[in-house]
Image 1 (cartoon, rainbow, N blue to C red):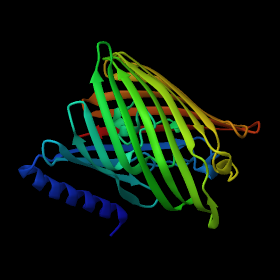
Image 2: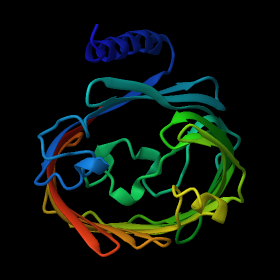
Image 3: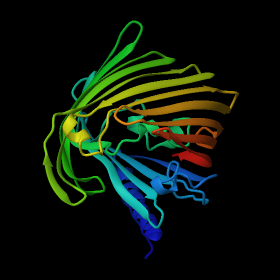
Length: 346
């Protein structure tokens, strides 16, 4: 059986099984689908993975994603949550459980989560897999981080105030990684705090995160590095009044000297700014995306010109032209990516 047929069979079985349970219980099933295609005008980035994974050969693999989210109430306080995510690789489909956790609603304002959870690095972290939720076909490059889920606990507190609704999220956890291209290591002592304030049109967010990369091996060689913690700081806002859409987010990533000496980790500053304007169902938008490596002379920039067309309340078509540039030690590499997608939620 091909991997494509296998993925389809798995999702069919999941649908059948959970649909049967849903008739008797309160199981809620939501899904999302993105079918994307694209091609670059140059092979300049092909040796380093292309632009957003695309090369100068036409492909429908990189952005095509299918996901299912399951929510099963256990009682008035406890709920089970899970997400299955299928992505199309170059030669096969991959299926994984992105997150699986329980939720406990202690009060109307305080709740807890435990299990495999998503790290809230960014404003769009909790639904970064759902392309329909944002204007781009895919998140800007500054969102790229090698690890986005951990095994841990989260506490979430929200309180409506006079002007803003305020929330505080605190989490902690760990993650063991083996057979990763970076090596074998233990991501431990992970913790963070997220502060959010929002009104009808405006959302403000600030967060800080700490984690320790205990590295056992790199490239098959035992190294035994147990460094000081790495830090990640984020600040951003979203303004959306139904016509004007504005998104800005900045991050500072800082690494201890022990990790920098491996040649894999660096201090990096990232900046993203998006401005869009809705004309009925169509929203043209422009994005500037910058990643600035503080330890070596390397700066990666992207300029994205895109259009989102909301065909139906749960369906959107997107078209995007992305200009990618990498300046390393004064040597600049450039390529342009043209891509399109259809996004569905159901």
